[in-house]
Length: 459
Image (cartoon, rainbow, N blue to C red; front, side, top):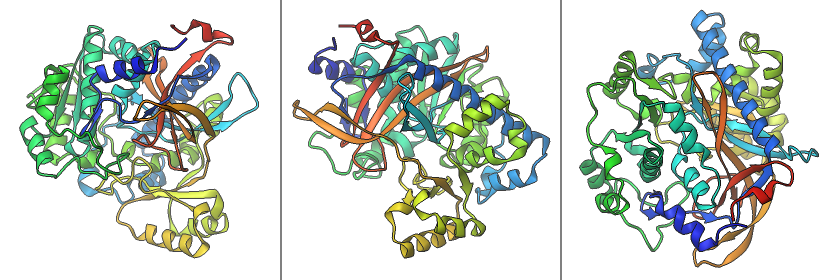
């Protein structure tokens, strides 16, 4: 039913994906897709629509200045230079991280619980590559190509996250294959980025998901671009204007200089559209805490509120007043950076501290230190994700059975007509409670099919 494993990997590699010095696939590929009921995809799209409504509601409250306490929470410990970045335009795309809570409903075997909205996500390229490799419908690239409707897309990235450069270029090529135009535009020239990599300033393991340098590690950035045929999708200099282009800022506001933020704002003022607006509240996990505010809840229809309450765990800005509850209910909570830490530790589970894993004394110490940090921290109710078991391909080509904590990710895209699309769904399994894609994690795409629909998958 599924393509041979060698074919799957070869097709994924051929898209041009890579991560830092690794060419092609860098995770352990699942032997076959995760096949789940189509009703789950519809449920995810409903969550996405509710999430966009929630974000719109937060923007309405901020614009009306009707909840000063919410505004103060969202400003808490935000760098002063970023406070002017508050362009409250509609959010058009997000890619949440979902935990999978088992249910007794075979039509929806998992209750997706999003622990992060993720406003500047990676994974476009390798999520598409997985769909190509396993012979699934390429809904991610197809939906984005349709969404662009003739407009150019720019990935506007920062060198701090340049490990993901190849998968973004690969996605640009995928869009080109569908008649769309897309380019990658970073805050460094190719020459400068190549020099920084060669000097050991970037792409030095341990990296996110790559604890040690693999045997095959290629830092010759220009040569790899030529060999993969990706040069055409790299743009060297920031243009004066980009017209009606669609912009995706790959990086958080703190990663861009003030001059670069001013340029992004100027592009927007002259007709460009951001998938993820220049708004500092989007870059903070404190945003999830806004769901508890009556002012925001009043903006959301009851049915969508119920979806959000089911899909978003209780999240609070960490304050001294909250500490007694966190100590009393230690096993039920985790804390993590909300954003603006300057080193990217707020993302990818890098700063997570789980109460269940600590002694009472260590937990008390961690809470005390978190309150003293110069950036915001959130407390979130712990939602362990289901442990799944699947077969995956080892680096030597053999197949083994792996079990791990799961995470589902899907891209939500809001169309001009207001429809919410859920596309590019994929699952990651990691050994511990902290789940992240990497060389030791299993990944595979999701095939959403009606009951008995496995026969619809291509041979």
